[in-house]
Structure formats: C-alpha cells, structure tokens
Length: 208
Length: 208
Image (cartoon, rainbow over all chains, first blue to last red):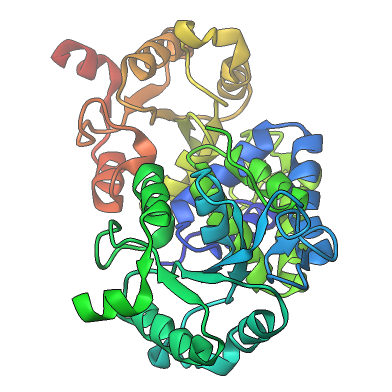
C-alpha cells in the first residue's frame, strides 16, 4: 500500500533509500530518520562519498578491476605474480579472495557470467581481453574462480575452450565451495583453501 | 577482520554505507557496487535527497512532527480534530498510525521516551510543550500511543500525572499490541484497532 509521509523531503529520501536492493520502505524510513539525528556533515560526507565513487571511479586497463588510477593496485604491485591470472565474475569476488590472503597472482574481472536467461552472452563479458592477455603476456596459469552454478560451469567451459590453443595451465578452484553457493558468501577458510587446492580444469571435467 | 578494497573511493563509500544502522560491510559493498551499475544521475539524485532532508527539514511548531513548512500538513488540515491529541514517541509512529487511516485527530511527537538507562529524562522530551498545548488549546482528549515497554509505561504515567490538573480525558491505546512489542512494527489492523478501542488511562492502571 501507498505510505504517506509528513514531509516531501522525507518521502524523497525514503524513496531513494528504498530503491536500493534489499532495502524495504520500513528500513528506508529508519535510515532516513537516522540521517536526521546525525550532523549535517554526516549526510554531506555520506552523499559525497557515493557521488565520488560513481563519478570518479576507474577500471584497471589490465584486469578491469575497480581502481583509482589507470592500473589497479594489484596489477601494479611488483610482488604479485603476473603469470598467474585468477578469473572472477566481479569486483566483489576480488575483495573476497584478497581477504583470504592466499593468492599472490593477479586477477581478470569478467564483469559478469554467461547467462542466456538474463541475455548475457560471451561478448558482453571481458573474455576477449582475457584471451589477448594470455596471447601477449607471459601467463603460465589461468585459475577459474567463478560461482559453482550452471552459469559458472558454462562460462568456465567457454573460457577453457577459448584458451586451449595457447597450451597454458587452466585450473579451477577446488570445489570445496558447496555446489550452488555463490563465491562471495563462502567463508574465508573454505575459499582460501579452494584457491590453494585448485585442480587441473580438464581433470575436473572427467570427475564431473 | 580488516577488509581490503581495490579502490579508496570504493572503501570510502563502503565505510559510509556500513556506518548506517543494520548495514554490515558485505551489504555495504553490494550497495556500493549497485551504485556503480546505475547512472551518475542516480547517485546524484540519491545523494541530494539525503542532504536536502538533513539540511532543509523543519519541525512543526505545534506537534514537533517533521514537515516542510512552519506547521505540518496534519496540524494545518482543517478536517483534523485538534481537540484529540495522540502522543507518540517519534516520527516513525506518526507514519505508522497515519497508514492505518483510523485516526482523525492530531499528534504530539515527544522525540523519545523516558529512559534512565539511556540518560533520557522528561526534560529531554517535548512533554512541557504538550502540557502548554493542553493548557492553551481546546484539547478534550490525549491518547497515549507509546511502545508497550517499561519505558513506555513510565512515560505514560509521567504524562498522565502532568495532565491531571487539566481534567481532560487521558486515554491509552488498547493493549492489543502485544506487551514488549514496539509500536512501529505492529501490523496495521492491530494498530488501527488499538486506536479505535483506546481505554481510559486510569482504568488501564487498575487492570495492570
């Protein structure tokens, strides 16, 4: 039903907050009233951080991770092993894997996953640029770290076939992550171990 | 543990979002990445609605409800019965009661509830202004619609004693709302009925 608010300003703020995913109108009202209890500087700092993120954000020209410069902190870090490329769906998964502290290679962010249901095909993703990276850089191994869903499996297989001509090692993270789970929700120990215990992609095909 | 983010802009946005009540760091990250997927105009509209709320909001000089002018839409509505004043803890409860469509009187927003544990005493609330309203306006009945908690009971009793000299009807919403529940979470039917079936405050004392 249509809620009525005593103030247009409040109604606008609630509408904006409730347009975020997972935020209902009651939660939005609580958040708006919380804003009112804080200083003006809190609302201003909050607002400017979000606008700055959206307006000033850049994407790494190498791995398509979010960054503040031309190249992300991971790609430009000389201690990272650039011959080891971990393929992930999105930025969330980079954050999740970085937090395990188990991976010393670099990333390749696809920007999504092959999903015919959502109209997302291979050309909507950064797959061609991954192939170019493998072709032009000294990549020894590509680790596939996509969600263990049907879409993830499809994308894994598509990338595996695309990389086949280059005769590099293509690994897949150990399926310690339960089937059907999303990478970002895996606990850090399971996720870290699945990076360490990664298996050869063609071996995993025989198993499945 | 301390999460690491690939971008300072992202980290700032996550920090701001996670400072809201009930928003954890994973949810904050999801919301920040959602912002990135939307247009710049979405982030700007979102930000400006929150800043406008905080900077431009006003409070009704009569009932202390949030409003856009000197007097709120409820207090300035000639169809509302100004002799019937419903006392609530906060703006959230005004929204909740308005949404029942069962109340045609006006409100008085206390801005909190007496809570010695949180250091909130009667002088921190709009109780004196309620007494002044009762003394100067033609108020026939005051309905106490505070949460059915110990703090709510304390505040009810304090207000009841303050209003005793004016010999007006002091009612309390029917305790259809289960004991220990907060007003804002009551379903609309229960809440609406509890407004209609309000009982005389001194009678409810005998019952309790």
